[in-house]
Image (tube, rainbow over all chains, first blue to last red):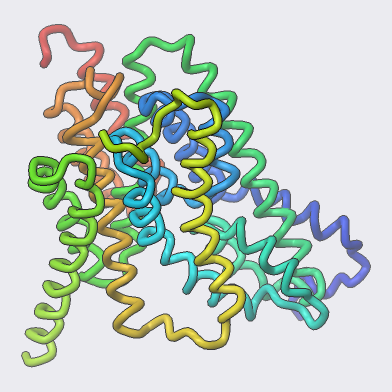
Amino acid sequence: MTMHLSDRPERSDLGWILLGMKGILSPPALILTTAFFGFAGLCREAGISWQEAAFMTAAVWALPAKIILLGAITAGTSLPAAAFAVALSSLRMMPMVVALMPELRGPKTRVPTLLFLSHFVAITAWVFAMERMEDVPRDKRTLYFGGFAVTLTALNTVLVAIVFNLMGQLPALATGALAFLTPVYFFNSLYGSARDVTGRLALFCGMAALPPAHWLSPGYELLVAGIGGGLVAYLGGRILKVRRGGG
Amino acid sequence: MSDWAYSDVVPWWPYVFILLGGWLPTDVWRYIGVVSASRIDETGEAATIARTIATSLVAAVIAQLVFYPSGALADIPTWVRVVALCIGFAAYQLSRRKILAGIFAAEIVIGIWALAPGLG
C-alpha cells in the first residue's frame, strides 16, 4: 500500500511541469550547476564573449561537446575538424536518447514534441529522467521531463552569462581556480561513470596521448589524441578481457 | 591558424562557428536517436568503440587544460595543476565517489599554493 506519485491523478498539467522544475534542486542538477561555474571561467579563458558563451550553452547543451568546442577554439582548429571532434563526442547522445524514448513516450506523444525535448538530453537530464520516470503517469511524462530539462538548460544559460561577467571583478588567480573546476569535475565523473576497464583505460590513454599529439599536430591535437587514445584503450580493454576470460 | 578557424573579426562568424561546430554535430545524434529508437543495439561492438573514443576525446581536453592551458590557468604552475588533479581524484575515491568532495580538495590545493609564500 505504498503511495506513489501516480496515485494522485488530480495533479494538473501545470502541476507536473512545476514538479519537474523542482528537480533542479536535486543533487545531480546542483553538481552540474557547479560545473557550469567552471565552464563560465573556461569561456573567459578561451577569449570568447559572454554572449557567445551563453549562446553555446543553450545551443549545444552537452557539456563535453562544449568543452571540446572551446578547446578547438583555443587551439585554432578549423571548423570541419572541430565539428568532427564534437560529432564524435556527441555520438553518445544517440544511445542515451534511444534508451530514454520508451520511457518518455506517451500514447499520444507526437514526434515533433520528442525531437524538441531531445535537445535537452545530456548526461544529467538523462540520469534524472531514467531514475524518476516510472513514478510519473505516462501521459504526463513529457510535461514532467520538459519542466525539468528546459528549466535546467535555461537556468544554466543565464548563470553562465552572469558568472562570466562577475568574473571580470575577480583577480586572475580566482578565475584560474574556477576554470580548474572543469578538468577535476570531468576526470572524476568520467572515471565514476566508466562501465568497465575500457572506459577507465580511455580516460588515461586520452590524457597520455595529448602531449605527443600536441607536438605532432598542433591544431588537431584533440582529434588525434582522442581517436588514437580511444583505439588504444579499446584494444587494451579487449586484450585484458580475453586474458581474464582465458584464465 | 587555418582559414576556417574561430575568430571574432566578423561579428556573426563566432555564432556560425558555434552552430555548425557545436549545435549541428550534437543535435543530429539526438534526432537520430528519436527517429531510430527501436533499431539500435547499445551493447554492440560499434557502440563500445564510439563510447571509448568519446571518453578519450574528453580526456584529451582534460589533459590540454592541465598540461597546456592558456590565460589565468597558465598562471598556476604545471606541478600545482597536476597535484591538484591528483588530490582531487584521491578525495573523490576516498569520499566514496562524491564529485563535490573531489572538486573541493583540488581547489584547496590551488588555494594553499596561492596563499603560501615561496611556493612555486
